[in-house]
Structure formats: C-alpha cells, structure tokens
Length: 255
Ligand SMILES: [Mg+2]
Image (cartoon, rainbow, N blue to C red; front, side):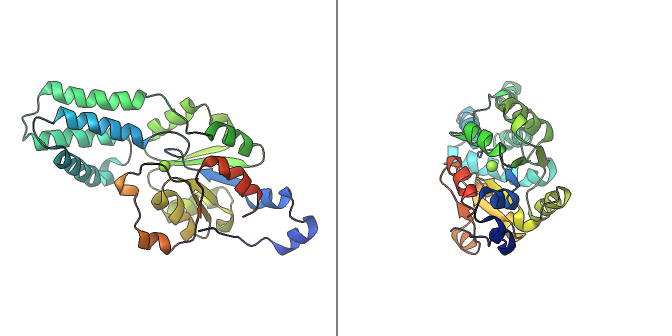
C-alpha cells in the first residue's frame, strides 16, 4: 500500500514541487540496521542449524527449534535482544533438552558458536552503501536499532557507514513510545518521521501508529517474533519497496 502524504500547500505554492519541499518534509530519515543495512537473521539461522546438529543425537530438529524459540521468548524480558541473549537461550535449551546430560565440551561449543556470531564480518546488503551515501547528501540519516548496546555499536562501527549517519539510536525495544521519544528528542514532528526497515512489527507499524511514515523493505527471512499476520497488515497503511535502491527516488518523488 502506498502512502501519499499531503504537501504543505503554502510551500508548494512558493517553490513548486522541487527538491526543497521534499528535503524539508523528510529532513531526517531513520533506518533500521539488522536486515535493512546488513545481514543478520541469516547468521542466527546458520548458528541455529549448528546448534541443532550439536543436539541431533538427543532430539529431533523440530523439537529443538520449538524449545529454543520458547526459551528465547521467555528470556526476552530479562535479557533483551541480541547474540548474548541468544547464547544463554541455547545453553538453557541444551541443558533442558538433555536433562542435564549435555557435556561441558558441548556447552563450550555453544558459547563458541555465539562468539563466532559476535565476531562475524558485517555484510552490507545489496545497494546499501551507494544508497546511504546518496541519501546522506540531502538528508540527515539516523540509525534506529534495537538490541545489545555493545553489539550494535560494534556493528555500526564495523559497517563502514557510521560517517554517513548523524546519529545512532540503540534502543531496547521498538514500540510507539520509543519512536515518539526519538522524534521529540530530535525535534521531528511525528508526521515528518520517516522510518525504513525490514520488520513490519518493529520498524513500520509503530511509526505509522504515531502518525509517521513507515517504509517496509522486506528481507528474505524474518524471525518468527517479528512476523505480523495479514489482518494486522491490512489495518495499517504503509509503503513497501522491494529494495533499498528504490528509496532515494521514492523520497525525491515526495510520495
Ligand atoms: Mg531489522
């Protein structure tokens, strides 16, 4: 669904439909990071496959996946998002599923899987570098990412994109209140707030709910926790682009 925000009539009359209007409308563009700027969920999926293989002689794969997801959901309010929380959930699941029979060496292997995730190189998604460079020439860009502070800071630094962003907001959750607080702090009217991301649940719908503009760029895989059912999607109006490469043109069109 495509949103068509109304242009301010007086400024449109003065300056026509030139770039000035649109840059003033969308001075600030907020972007999600994981699976919007760089690969992330794949890393979790790959690690989970190794975790499954590690426990294969104890249980069947579907059962392991289900129990791990339960542990993640149970731990989320306590440990938050990120790799360290994922490691703890894997350890807990391994102990539970083996009824304590997991060996110290196997626990060590789980921790190593997590460490490898933390140290994995940042792989920017297709078109991200050139798009960010181009957008940064005309707009203030801000990263809004949720997760572990140290982990997300490290990823931003290692991405090579930091210099193109005016600010980085690392938050523990992405709900309407979080976005309202960011908009207030940065002096952006809610209706001028543009947020771009791969998660409808975290990046798009809460921003739409506060009156801003949510731009969804789907990634090929989505964590079950971030999924939104059809009914929920239909209730909201947001923009969907197939690639971040489409973003500058869409912004410039004033859509
Ligand atoms: Mg994301």
